[in-house]
Image (tube, rainbow, N blue to C red):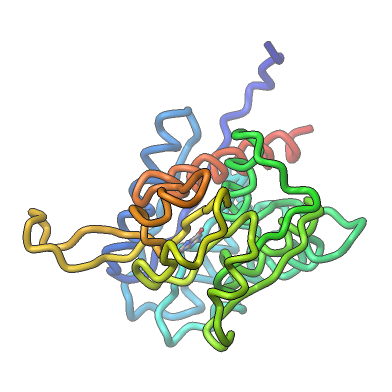
Amino acid sequence: MKEAIGVIPGLAVILVGDRKDSATYVRNKKKACESVGINSLEVHLPEDCTEQEVLNHISGFNEDSSVHGILVQLPLPSHMNEQNVLNAVRIEKDVDGFHPLNIGRLAMRGREPLFVPCTPKGCIELLHRHNFPIKGKRAVVIGRSNIVGMPAALLLQREDATVTVVHSRTCNPEEITRQADIIISAVGQPNMVRGSWIKPGAVIIDVGINPVEDPNSPRGYRLVGDVFYEEACKIASAVTPVPGGVGPMTIAMLLQNTLISAKRIHS
Ligand code: GUN
């Protein structure tokens, strides 16, 4: 048992607008904080607020010594410049790992980011915890977003995988995915990765969370991943389910990053 240092880790979350998916993610993050004793503060701003208002809140949290992590839920409304907003978060409190300095360090050999983005970090943690080797393996990342695809590819490379990124302009992506020992899919296309895209025995991590109409569900829709789960299960050695696979890992990594931050700031 480590000695307690008498500090309660604090996470500040900024949510702008009324997107239902974002509100759900923020609610789940808050609940998770409460369950482990992390203090969570939330600022909810209206869709039509100004970028300056968001920047003012970030500035306040940057200076607040009870806050160890700052998270701006994405996407932001289209009238805001996401880069300006993410640049404003102090890198020592950038628990999402989206500040360009943290991403830049992630991309460079011999440099260490202060924080690694939560979803890709959770994907790698899943592979480690299940003892799937990464070193020397062929990994294919589907999608090149700043939040998941790009940092996932960088992390896999850091783990000595040979990495290919497949994206919306890739010709015949299935020919590439069929060679992969590890697939991480983060494109937001329901059931896109069919059984025929998968090499027998591959490990599949499905980051997609896509609502599809379902008249039999009380809400009128259900959530599916990017991967056709039933087909993938027959061919892959392991497939993460949606929901319940990567989602909880993202939250766990956010809590971990917040704890790392509190310890580092108070060390
Ligand atoms: N929107 C979708 N995923 C994420 C995430 O991991 N962090 C933030 N801040 N916004 C998101």
